Length: 305
Image 1 (cartoon, helix red, strand yellow):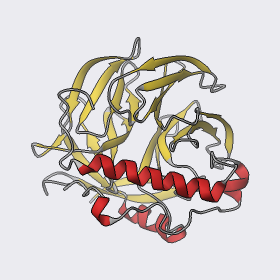
Image 2 (cartoon, helix red, strand yellow):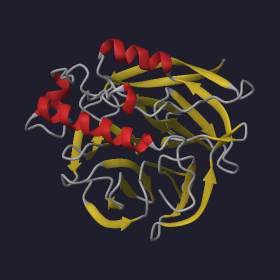
Image 3 (cartoon, one colour):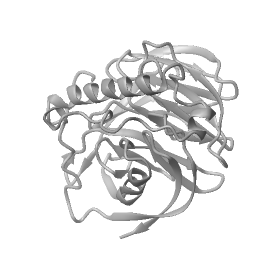
């Protein structure tokens, strides 16, 4: 968290996030053993799931979900499932995007973090690049034929070749790294607070910040980001809601409810974690969503409620 950034409403939130991720790590390592990345095709094909309860933490340690939406006047949207493909159930999804017809996904958990290229039509993992075991992978973005990758608390990121995933460079930043998106010129970065950083990719320098609000109140836990037709769409951690954010003002101009999709994912695999992952395929004008350990990647149509 950078100096001046508004902290989440509950100090224990960061403890809860860390505890939950450590338990998720323990569960994944105990189950997957040598296949620690959890992203190989055999693990996906076998339908491997995590042991019941291992991704959960006691209620006393769990940070409270954000009290959103704040205002009934903010437009609400529901979704219709258009299509879906298989998603790696071992993937602790942190970042998602489509570039040149290929799905890119980054995953978290120390010892299991990677970035991978995925076949859009099937969900098959085509290629992956693992992070060193000490790093917890977070969001990704592609800008000017460079793939940028964050880590959670290490203050270190990588620049990769999108075609090969080979590292080309690295960069540093202060505070936590959660997610990124781009308008084609600058990078927008979340750090889990209610504030987005606008970053110049040359040197990864913060040029300004955006406070995300709804009805005049800060929206904390802004997580995975995607640029969709001039708006920033953002998952909110611990909620099955996507905020539609005006990047000029930071105001939430609408809420998209992914609750029914999350419920369906949990019926298929009760060990799924939070909704996390929005990808916009501009060529096909379609929005794709998923979550941590979700069994499917879902194409959605958004409809005003």
